[in-house]
Length: 116
Image 1: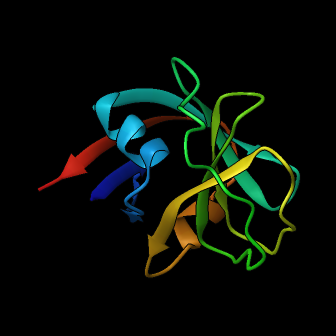
Image 2: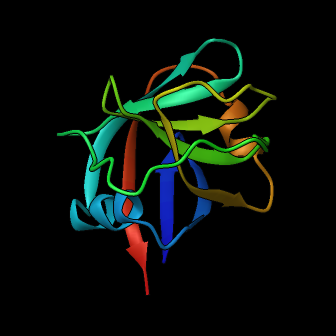
Image 3: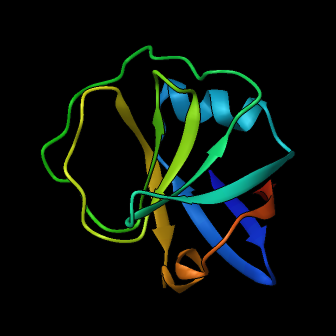
């Protein structure tokens, strides 16, 4: 499963894992959200509802480009700089290619659609 994400004249593709949370995200598409800066290393966007936590597991290999949901807040998280795993993060997938679009600062309208 792949997503096309767009904001501020920027586009990027996300490859999703085959997990219950990622499938739950796809069930919400298409989405029109707001994306904003958070914590100097990520962008966040609040979903209309929290995603399932079924099958969620801790992971030990956090990497730039990871796309997650933070279960306690119910938001999408796009990491554009190093981070450490925190309890409540559920990895959904990874940004394909460059993470440069995520470095565009500010708060912007944000769309998420599924790619064939």
